[in-house]
Image (cartoon, rainbow, N blue to C red; front, side, top):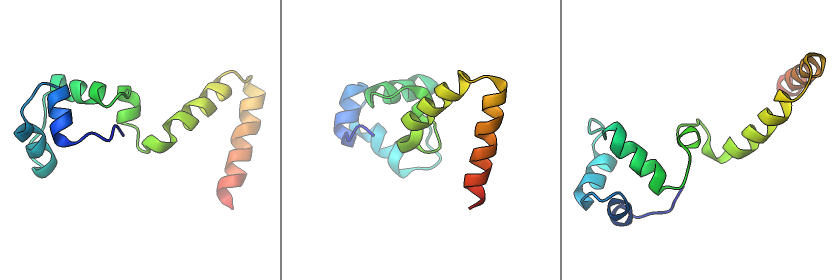
Length: 89
């Protein structure tokens, strides 16, 4: 994502190093929404991409979605049929 060390991230979001270390090591330690948004911003990504199931595919998926949105209903149906055929392979 942003290739930040825990120390660099903690400095960017203005919290101590221990906070980031606790986030990484304790499953029951959750940041506040404010801190989470600061982390996302420090990583230089939009929240949609941060929470996307496959961040590596986000940009490509959004490009494809943008193109599909501009199609008429009949063309969307054809694209959906094609995608079904590809997925059946």
